[in-house]
Length: 195
Image 1 (cartoon, helix red, strand yellow):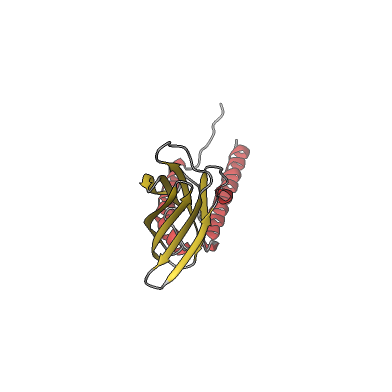
Image 2 (cartoon, helix red, strand yellow):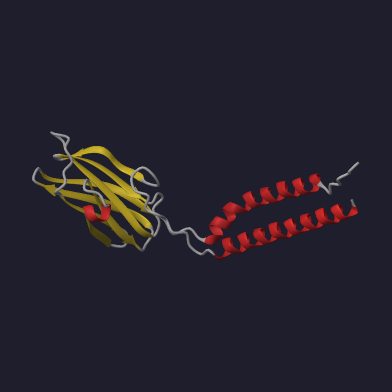
């Protein structure tokens, strides 16, 4: 009996040491991360719909921007072009996306292509944005049906830092520590009696 209690105590001490080491490694990992990279998740996730089947000239445009919220780094604008009359997707258009920061005179422009969208229907432009601010956006579409233009606003935020993530995570970690401590002290040492 005494041997079993000693073995159980050793197992509990070992498990407690492993949990403390894992918690310490988790905290160190969180502190060493300096930047969170946003992933372009494409239409349907992590995106903002700029125009949901909006008519622009002879076209119906469905436009999304990702990541949402947009941060300094690559911002992807995806455009789907349909003919207003037939509803057919237009696959041979020339699509250009422009972002302008009026306060600084900064102008970013890129062609939106099927290759960048990895889709025969959608057009995508990956625009590297190096400065936060409120951008005026313009999408220009040109094909056999004619020319169209759609204006929008794209807000780009500074990247999230580790300190921001740490501040957001602290209440969660504190709650876990309190609950873990309550569980540990409530469980207490257990003795097994054999008859």
